[in-house]
Image 1: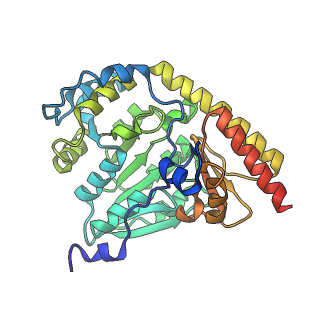
Image 2: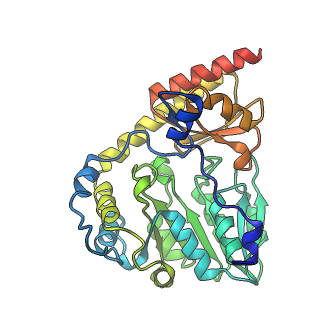
Length: 361
């Protein structure tokens, strides 16, 4: 038998259907992909300029010094407190590799982002999954579940797939109950979509909690998901450990240049946030008019309750040119997760949903 025994009980990550795949299957000319929470407004023009200057014939700077310096300047933190990854997924892998093994356990909400579980299992750790309550982390129960074998606790806010946001007051209450030897990974992949008045005090939290790792990504609001770049912010001693386990050239030259350029364009980020908020609110109004309910969201997606099996509804939308994510795969049966596209695409989707609702009578 090849590989670790646990691999025989697991399945590879299954992504949603891709645009060309749907076009061929349903003989359609136009597809609107609303399944992977990408930015429908693309990426900054500054990124286009930056990626043309990368030297492809040379190995990248494995330490990504220029990008670390750009992040250090943006957040007013030492460069030693940052670690770069090929997307925040890569950093999740590194955290599991560095801190989890047989005889340890790790705590997470259920459902939440799937890759915490995937990589923890590969490292042989025991899972403690605490059910969410109306899409929200049950932080009280997660804290109570910590024992001597607990090494890592995962907190996703805003959560994927529910979109729920944990207020900083709730977070501090939770952290006060976490022993110093237990790492807390705060996954903030969608933080740029959250109203800035709700953002945590990053400086104060990193100073107070030496066991805190904050994960962020360029895949969402920055719009460069295809280049795979994310980063972690943490105490420099933790960063040094993750730098040991990550691949020596885990981010490319093009990716590093693109990320530096993306960081410099605050105007693009603000416009993306504003456009997303407007499209999200209008889509919620449309759903209210139809009579469908949904989870509160602080992100660029909405988890929508539906009256039939999720896979059946996904197929209905596929045939009409819309790709969304089935809640069956996300731990929320009879829901679909819908990325918020531009206003025009969302209006077309609302019309399709309204037609579906009328057909059902």
